[in-house]
Length: 290
Image (tube, rainbow, N blue to C red):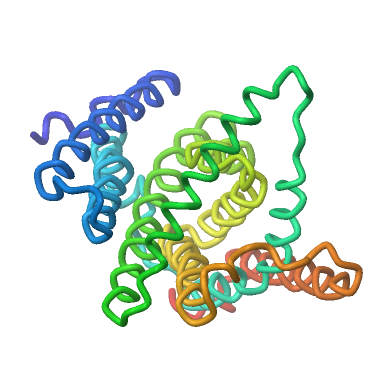
């Protein structure tokens, strides 16, 4: 199989995107078949979780490694599967926590989206899709047992963090950046990252997080700090639902006037953390791990 390594490296961006999309579709078909094979009864919560895990792996993770193998001579270098500075890991985790109020404001503003009357049918479809996604999430988080918590951390937090980062920041951001430059590559991959979730009333905050994750990869020169940040973001939601109830995941008045200073502190702190990551990446003397 070594003769296939880097086979598509010189192909156009459009060809690479088309091939990646083809691999995603194939992965989805395989995931559906495996889900029906191992979990034929989809009315069982654990079967749904298993199907979700299988789908995430076959739709996001495996196609990414196939593409990385065909698009380059080194999967590790292409996907940036190298260790980064320990400070980047610490700052990435802290950044996601500090961004919670900012993301909350964006989510509330996004939810106020009202389309023109001639797009009413599209708006109904968007709301229906959003409701289905929310219902599935609430089903997953309804298990309040200790075992259920561990399974949710694995299925909702860990697997998506790894698989989605490898696909969107590892493959898409890389091929877009090679063609259009780093910043456009980050934004384009973030837009696709948000759109592919088909949760349009959460499009803006998810795109914003995608941009942040993209810059984390850029500043750290590694995908692992972004995986950690993504996992931290997902983990917070799982833990909040487990200890405080799933209803606490709904927006809680970030647009209220008294929250202004909290939002301002979130924006400033997050900006400072991003600047520090950029600064550390440019200053060898301040790197803890070389």
